[in-house]
Length: 294
Image 1: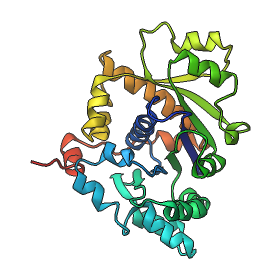
Image 2 (image 1 turned 30 degrees about the vertical axis):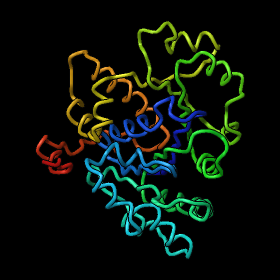
Image 3 (image 1 turned 30 degrees about the horizontal axis):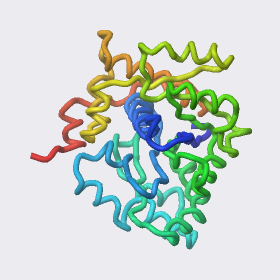
């Protein structure tokens, strides 16, 4: 790859726009379909939903939240400048071998843990850039976190996660909800939990607010939400990746494909490399990667 990029997913609000689902969906699609190395990470303190989306049991999640894995271990090394691009991957967990990794969030609480992550985050991101072709980060929603500011400042592209709430959209397009770090940053809009039958379609919203750029969507889909709640989202994308018949799952894959393609454009690399055939996994492979209890 010629260059690596950091893409932050951010929303003005907590829990209304499907932000974590969007990160997981984009990461899954890219990990399955592109010959690049992608890292998923997040900076949430109060919950670890990104790990929950992918890992099938509480035991698996706890196993990567100890100091030997995840961002807590990385912060320890970063504080003494022992972290490097080569050592970072020792503390990530593989989701799609060779193509998709996740760096677990912190298991610690309190101001001291917050301060340590805040102080070392720019260094960690710099190492991630050298280790991976693409970094997708689920940033804390809102504008009150120093960590969010650091993530956005160090990002090359921000995916602003909104929904079809007209009052929210009015405030956003007036500029009232845009994080200060995004003011001069390249960003795209993603409408999460998208209801395709609403009169407030992406096209209608563009016309209403005279917005000239593309508006991406992540449609509401029962199958995708069931996979999210069952820790099976990557398996969901594996099994629906080649679906041809027009159904609800296929519509979601199609919309995520458009979002993923836009993100890939940021890499500014040789498209021939990206289009090389990728290793295809069978259902047996998937079950071996993600063994289920019982």
